[in-house]
Image (cartoon, helix red, strand yellow):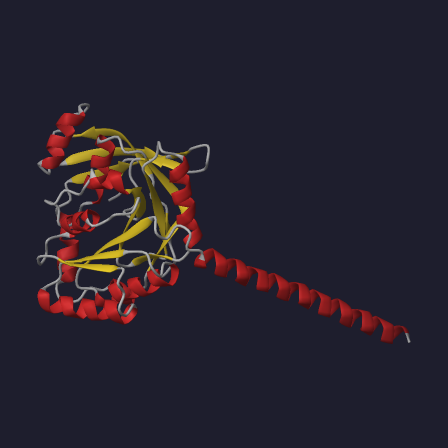
Length: 311
């Protein structure tokens, strides 16, 4: 009799535990659904992306972004050759058929990432602009919404950069957030005048930028001078701070240096995560890799952190 009662209580306890676990799981699923299906702010930003010779990437990019943002405007700048553009357009249409909120910009061949991003920005009409690569996508709408709300409430800041996760097969989470300390010219002379600095930058003169760690503000955001080129920015700010079209690639350091010269206030949020697509999507077709990575030998700005070059 005692054993029977014990087994009965044990059965009730097990069922109660299972019911609680099921309810928790249902709660998580409901939270996730509503978090990523809320469209409250989807008309406040435009997504800008530059692509060349990666039809698999741009198709996957559109597919993933449309899961979160079904009606947000996506502007795609493509400077592949004319024949390959047909392949890119096919991938885009397969990912999101008859999508009236995709603006496809056919650019002159190899006009470069700077030119392409500038052309994207020209077409933006929303208060905010998202800049990202064709292999980096958002998967959490709430992170983006938090950034928009923070910028809305804090007009002293202009941009929030994000981090990148899964940049390789090891799932590395890239934390890239630095401040500029000192800047030297090619003769190792300290540059203290920003007018002289912009002249050197415009001439693509060699520069050495000493960087420091960034620090969090009272709200937990890092105040930075340079982050990754995956960010949300006020559209009126980016329209007045475009990329240097002399740089077809290797534009990263130059762009953030120009923002610093123009006193643009930037934050970094380690929880604002862009996910790197897998290696399958990162491969270039034709000679895309040569066009993309030629900047490795042409970069005119060295970033130095702890006496080491980091770019």
